[in-house]
Length: 218
Image 1 (cartoon, helix red, strand yellow):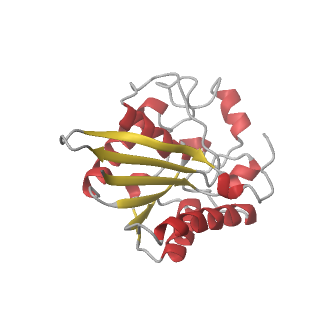
Image 2: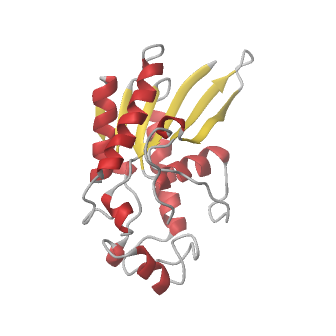
């Protein structure tokens, strides 16, 4: 029996993604036209199953691209949307709004390359972000036990969910792909003996985006 279900929808393409910029809280300007279309397709995909087994709520982090994605899904499903600071992405410090290529060159790689070292002045470390985000997500999961929950999320939140629920050690070199508006689903199962475990039902599902113009490869 499935007792709790977590569905993570990565936000649609944002303008900062299209421009190759670090999209921190100061400089995120929201979704592109393609990003809106991607979010709408994800919402329609979820609406089909919502008719059979309703979702309870959708959570979104504070950055504009998450809020816009979450509101599209909430309006389509007609469920409450909750804005929660615990779903915010990494702190980028002085890199906020800068070209990712320049930031990675200056830091000798992206956030994952040196996971215990900030990638810019005032930024998180990758491992530090994962620890904080794992604590926050664990709280949200406990608060929503027994519900079907949608998260309009950063790709980093999807990685956090896998790190937390798979028990991956912080600092592991492994990673996960996460396309814009992709769907990732975790289910908490309990069998007839009362034994429980989390199971990954799907990761980076983009079937609903097949009719849209593909994003250019970086």
